[in-house]
Image (cartoon, rainbow, N blue to C red; front, top):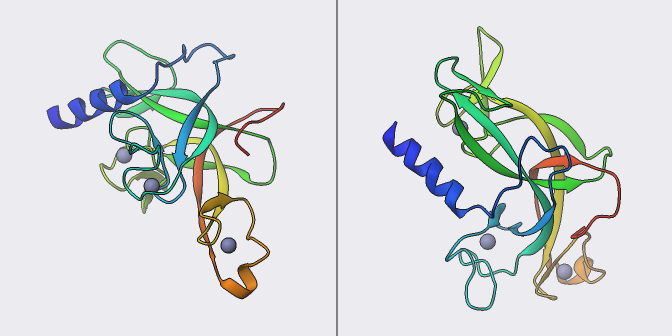
Amino acid sequence: MRKLLSLTLLALLMLPAPAASADPARSRFSSLFCPECWTYLYGHGATDLKGNCAACGKYPLELEVQTMSWYWSPQNHLWLQDPMKGTLPAESLAAVTRPGPGLSRAHYCPEHRNFKGVRLPLLQRMVCAEDGKPMVLAWASHRTWFWCEWDGGWSLTRSPEDPIKHCCTPRTGLLLATPQRGPMAGD
Ligand SMILES: [Zn+2]
Ligand SMILES: [Zn+2]
Ligand SMILES: [Zn+2]
């Protein structure tokens, strides 16, 4: 428990300064995202001296995000949307996303920041595959980016040379999302 707690605190410290989560007009900011590692890059050592992902060496994308918070209640063994006495906060980055067919509701673990869950056979409830905590329902955006070996960059489509050179490799997955209308950055 203590280890989990300190990991959560560490993760919180590494996040950019969060905007007030209760505010519906939470401020947007941009964050680096590595499609190869499927993770946001923040904190010391996440990028190398060239600004590339320290883990895979590829240059990251810049996504427009907002912070989202959930609060773990040990008493109720549940994630709550609002802080209460004795709850522990967990923050995630959510990609600002246009409403559309790529958006869906998905089960999400605010602590591990992923969608990896298992369904409990009797209760028909989704729990985190790592720690068995019940998951929350959140907006998820199904995204794909192609890494082009030839161009050395990410793009939303395969390059015209791909049928001959076989240079483009897709990375696909779910991103926590916050649907919004209006101009987007980083698409
Ligand atoms: Zn990476
Ligand atoms: Zn979890
Ligand atoms: Zn290519």
